[in-house]
Length: 318
Image (cartoon, rainbow, N blue to C red; front, side, top):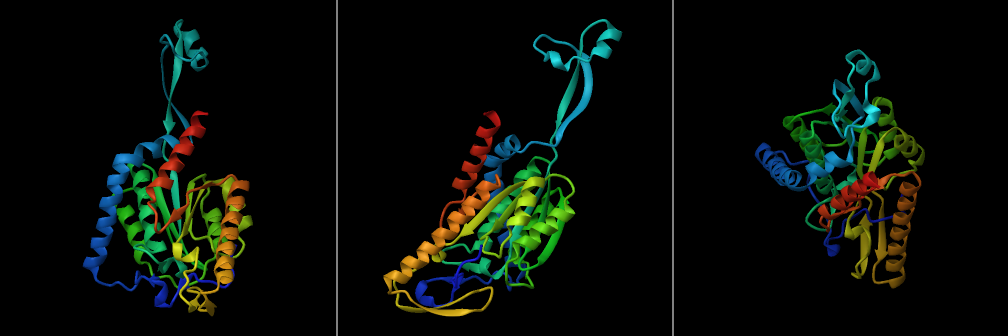
């Protein structure tokens, strides 16, 4: 699903694009301050909006038997325990409670293209903030959350656990982990996930999805788990401004190319290629029954997140 030579990260300042120094930051106070800022912001959002929606759209693994009790008017007749009813000579019903605990996995792309951002947030910063909302929503509902960071290899795996401190660690790693690889191998990350997760889980894949073919591994993961794709785009990757001759560098391969952005044909070709790639992604996700939450560094991520939860709720009650 890769795209032709192109500006995953422009290095010419005329575009106003930048690469943020996410990983090299070494001041512990600054690191803690940024993590704390994300925690406060995302926890407020979770408490105000997403915790209840999360609970209602993600079901547990099944129902646990709790007890039997006497039948009351309005109880479901199918829940009557006929053995106990026969012994007690009065109707008794079985009472069940939902087994709520889920496992949530965050697959986050930390390849070099994630450092790109032409606006306030880079793709990696946006990924960390959105993943933090999902993590806190899960923790609020007593679910376990794990993290898998990937580039052209699996960089880091943190097994699912509960608790605030665990979630803060996940945020820190998403922001400041220094990956060894620069490229993107989503297929390898999904294959790794399919091997280590034995039980059905909710899997959020946060990436720009610019990677070699991963159709097979995505199909397998979609059958085993509840996979939600969260493709991230930046406006600087969708269209070219008219600023003359520009040198671009691919952040993952180091390949450079010179483009004359004054050419309308070049700008149109670039935009058409990006549109083709986006439609191919939508078709792939749709054919596999995978929900999509589109994210953009220059747009409010609360809108697509709310839309996602609302779609899920409508499907449940339909």
